[in-house]
Structure formats: structure tokens, C-alpha cells
Length: 280
View (cartoon, one colour):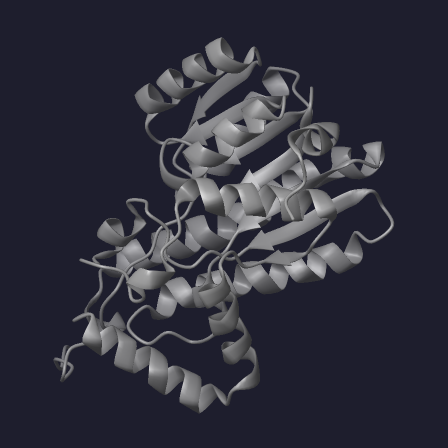
């Protein structure tokens, strides 16, 4: 059963929450739900105009404060720009939501190497640096937490999405280890592992349709459940019955079988070539 609104207000109300990738998709939905719970927001993404429009709406509808920090977190200086802006505005972040990320699909040998490196920088590097940069004040206050958006792809190798799945496997492992370190401090950490969600992610990654269309969830349902799980102190949350079964299967079945099944799925979606091109 989901926690009622007033319960989640206890951990978010009048606290500052930083949401990355807030200009669309799950990030935008997270910002809207957090504002309903009384959180003040720092919104970061590359598209400043969309962030400003969202911030204005959230201030008007929810009566909260919302700051905008445009930054490209796939660039090495992006995280420092966000951290410096937070310090300059004298804002203490109580909760960090590492949502920014992107994926790609296709044979690794044929994908753009710069885009693959930027994906690792954003999906992994930015998560580590933002968490490290903001965790100290949370520990000193004995309050707050980190919510990292991973993926069900992080539970197994995914051929023809090799970099993306590996990056999300890092996020899952990193978050669970961090949660164990934080036990007893008053600071929480949780990895949200959604499957397919109705956002622009699939199109950006090169998919015409999701692998399991019957498992697709709305952003609203995904985030409602995720914030309730975070409030309960859970360390790992996979929304939806089908996604939960998929995650369990990836943990208990042999890696070879799981990888074979993932390869079959990618071939069915047309993202796996029948034969790799030899490139020098």
C-alpha cells in the first residue's frame, strides 16, 4: 500500500531536493511529485527554457521555491558547475535525485565512441561525483538521502545495449553498497529500477517500441511507487509486477541463459545485426 501524501511530507516538506534530468520524462514527474510533497527544488538539465517553465509552474501551483541550474552533466565540468551554484545560493540539499541519463542500442563496435563515453560520464561519473559532493551535509544533519534512477537493464548483461546496461549495473551496486554504509546515520539511499516507461527515452536510445509493451508503466505510477518506497527506507525498488519478475529471474537464472534471452529480445526489436561488420 502506498504511503499517504502527509506521510511523505515528513521527509520532503521544506527541504531542498536536487533533481537532475528534470526537464522531461521521469525527472519532470519527480519534480512535480516532490513539489506536491512540499519540497523546495533545484532543477538541473541542459534545456534551460524547459527548466524555467517547469520551475515557474511548480512555484505557482505548489507555493514552493524552485531554482534552475542548467548544466550538461555528461561534461567533466558539469557536476562542478551544479555544486558551485548550490554553494553560491547558500542552499543545503537534503535529498539528491540522480535521474539524468541516456542509453544507446546497437552493436558496440558500431556505436559512436564519443557518445558511449559521454553515457558513462553521465550515467556513472555524475552520479558518483554529485553523491560525494552532497553527502557530507546530509550526514552531519543525520537526515536526507540519495535516490538513484537505475534500470531493470542493470540486473543482467544486455548485448547490443552493453554500455547502458553496464552503467546501470554500476548504479545498482553503488547504491546498495552506499545504503549499507549509511545504516544508522539517518540518511537513506535507494536505487529505482524501472523497466519501460512512457517517456522519450526509447526514442533517444534508438527504439521504435519497447521490448515488453505490456510491461510499460506511466511516469506517474512509476514515481508514486518509487517515492513511497524511498520514504519507507527501501534500498531497491522495481515498479510493476512484470518488471519485478524479470529482475528476479535475472538474479536466479544462469547468466548465460539470461544473456541469451536478452540477445533474442534485441534481435526481435531489430537492434542486433545478424552479422557484425569488420571495422579497422
